[in-house]
Length: 106
Image: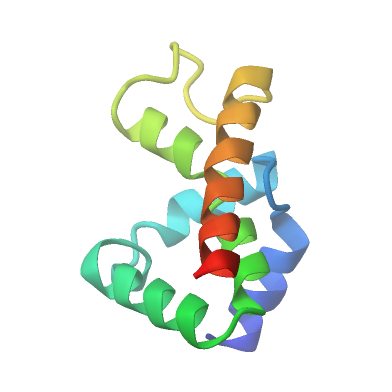
């Protein structure tokens, strides 16, 4: 992980809540090979299993996953991307909480 990535994610993203600046940043990042598919899965697996201090970083990094998935699959209710909708933020909160709980427990 580069320092630039860490600083950008730390400034733009919050765990549990999809902020607009994080959504826009991660939409671009998810197009890069290291941020989706097997490469991302391996990076996330080893980062979170080797070091527990990376769980917070990944909770920031993945805070907009639900919104990005919905936008890419045409399920964003015609909003065209990021939304501050409470339901979406709660879904992101739940998904991130499960990820953090899993990393801490195992």
